[in-house]
Length: 168
Image 1 (cartoon, one colour):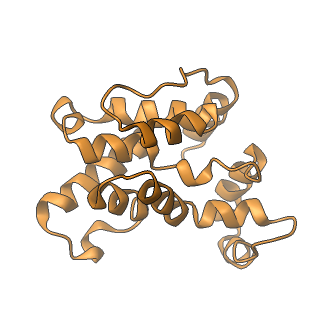
Image 2 (cartoon, helix red, strand yellow):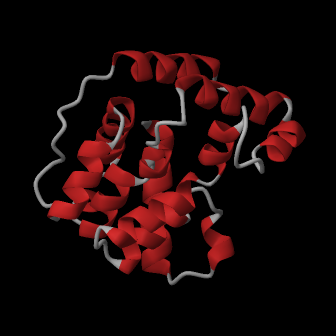
C-alpha cells in the first residue's frame, strides 16, 4: 500500500476547495452533476482531468469521465470514514469488505454505496444526457481493460482514465 499517497489523499479530502463549476464544455445536466458532488470529489475529478495529457483532455468523453467518474460516491450516506474503511479493509480484510459491501442498509451502507459507485455514476450520467462512451468509461473505470473486449481506441481511453485517477 502506498501509505503516503493515502495520507495525502485523506488530507486532500479534508482541505479540498475547488470551484463548484466544472470546466467549460460540459452540457448543463453534467454541469449540475459536477456542482452537486462533494467538494473532495470535485477536487479529485479536477485533479484526474489535470493528470490527462493535453491530447487526452481534448476527447469530450474522457473529459466527462475524468470529472465525473466518482459521482456515484457523492451521496449523503457516504462519509469520509466509509472511504477510509474501504481502503483499509480492502487491504487488510478484503473478504470482510466484500461481505459487508453487499448490505444495502444498516451501518455498512456507505461501504455498499462505494462498492456500487461506478454503476450508480453510470446511471446518473445516463440520466444527465452523457454519451454512451462517457457512461461506459465511468461504469468500467475499476475494471481490467483487457477483460472488456473493447476496441483499442476505447480501451486506451479507459486506460488513460485509470492512470489519471490513480495519480490524482
